[in-house]
Length: 131
Image 1 (cartoon, rainbow, N blue to C red):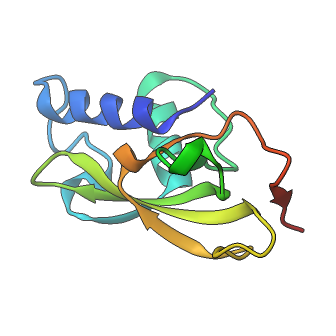
Image 2: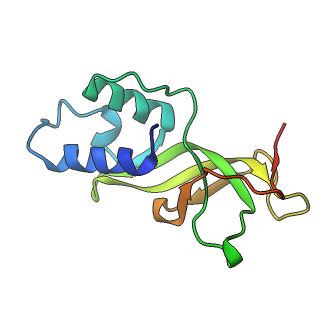
């Protein structure tokens, strides 16, 4: 299973090691900006010789909430790559699960720091999948 933490770690190591020349790096690593999850995943497949499914981003949810409640879960659609830090500093997440009558709506795009989310591995009785 592909995870954001793995992608972040992988590309930080690649960018900071002497292994790859700057011309060998994916084009999105040569500048700061938003990158689609698909493009990052495909780059990882190419560099590692793997065939991970890149059709959907990771499913994540808020890392820390009151009483560990889950109010939303969503798919990572884009990552902000900071060239100066050589890491992903923000994520765009499309809400795919939500609590009825909550503050979040289906399809809403949230922006979060990678350290503020965790993999969505368990659902709760109160969450409803968006159509």
